Length: 248
Image (cartoon, rainbow, N blue to C red):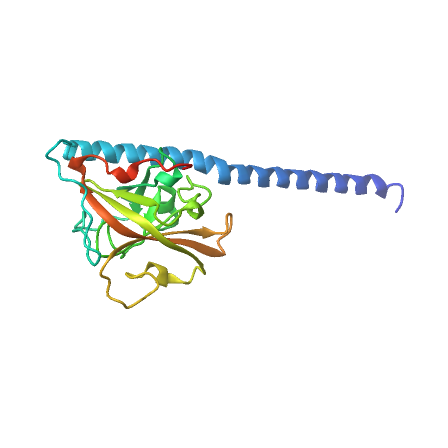
């Protein structure tokens, strides 16, 4: 290399180095946005949606707890309560709230109709065509473990017997965790009316929660199955199943 070519080579190396630094900074900014900023913005939006639903329900049917309020009733093992919703909500609309004491006393996330990318930014997504809260069949829900509020971040912490409460405008539905499994994304039978038994006629009300697995990967799905234990009218006040979990 001639003396004249050396400065030119240094300039090329310098420009390349600056481009690499810039690319690294842009990548870092994207990671910060993806992992933290989306959590902040979606978390605030989801909390606002929960507040709005609670206000709507309070106006439509104010709680009237008292000695005459009906007690929490457990359905027969082979049946479930009448569904709280007769019509499937429009895609993207919030229609229920999920409470999981294992995830903390302040955990309350809206359920929206649909599991498209935009739907899951708004909260927990309801798989179209699966059961509605309280119905015989399988109420199948999906949620992020990271980003966009990460409502199922702690899904792997759920233990058999843990409560998952789904609230609607008129009722509280308490499901109890039964089992969990890790499956390939193509294993859609986990959200069948009877989980993992496609084609079988359901006689019980199930709830299935799905999230990507392992953390920060979409290679598999972490799946939790729960069974309806009890139903309580909102007029009777919150169910006992909302009590905090030790260590939750």
